[in-house]
Structures are given as structure tokens and as C-alpha cells.
Amino acid sequence: MSEQSPTAEAMCRYLVSNIVDDTEAVRIDAVAADSGRTGGAVRFDVQVAQGEMGRVIGKRGRVAQSIRTLVRAAGSRDDVDVEVEFVD
Image (tube, rainbow, N blue to C red):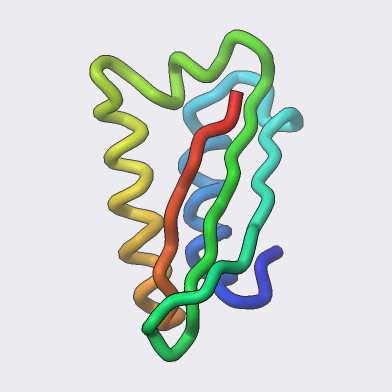
């Protein structure tokens, strides 16, 4: 669990795990980054099982964009800028 933004990471894990079939293969790596905000910034690199990335990204990237929006909102609760990257 990310020390900087536990709320955002929990939200990200919840959303992605409920979209994919293989929840055990969901991996979220938190990478700290520097930002102008008080709490800093963090990037979540999300990996899922082979063949499930399409479900997470969705048509025209709409699901991925929705995940990013919700996780950013959860990050603001911890006063942290959050970026979500989907890694193949």
C-alpha cells in the first residue's frame, strides 16, 4: 500500500479488480514523484493479466479515463496528485 496516498491506491485496486476476471494478477506499483502540492505526487503503474488490458482500457479509453478521474479524486483526499498509467 502506498504510504503517500492509501485512499487513492485502495480506490484504484478496487476499481481494476472489479473489472478483470483474474483479480490475483492485478499489480499496482506506486512511484513517488515531485510536485508543487504539499503532499507531493505519486504515479500508479497498473498491470493486469495477459489479455485483460482491453477490459481495463475500454472502448476509446473511456474506462481508463474514468478510473483515472476517480483515483485522482481519491488522491485529493490525501492531498496528493495522482497519475495512473496502465502498463502492458
